Image (cartoon, rainbow, N blue to C red; front, side, top):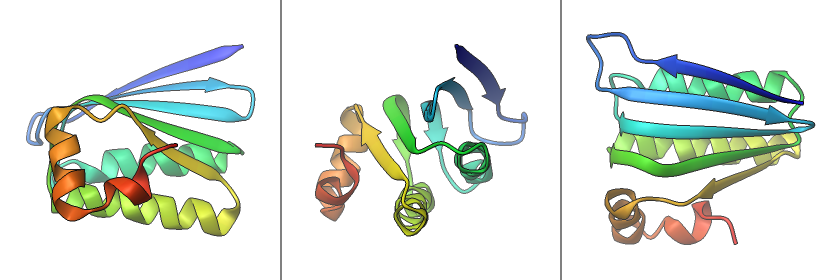
Length: 115
């Protein structure tokens, strides 16, 4: 059975939408809009919730993410570190053009992207 949860940002934050799908031991977080300091806690909370619910694999689908600042990048890196410490696979998939440019400019695409 697949469970889907939708989360939207409060009005004072940059527009961010998270859709969380769970199937068995896996969770997929579809991220859309803009990820910056004003709303990064939402993504962190979604990832933490997946961990707490026992996900053995967490996917982050970024194809609809239009903007990513340094703090958002920090959340992705921190989530990857934490997941690795817990023995959970965390994979980033489908970055859009804007996010891919950030990954390329920082050299973090090799570290964050699923193979």
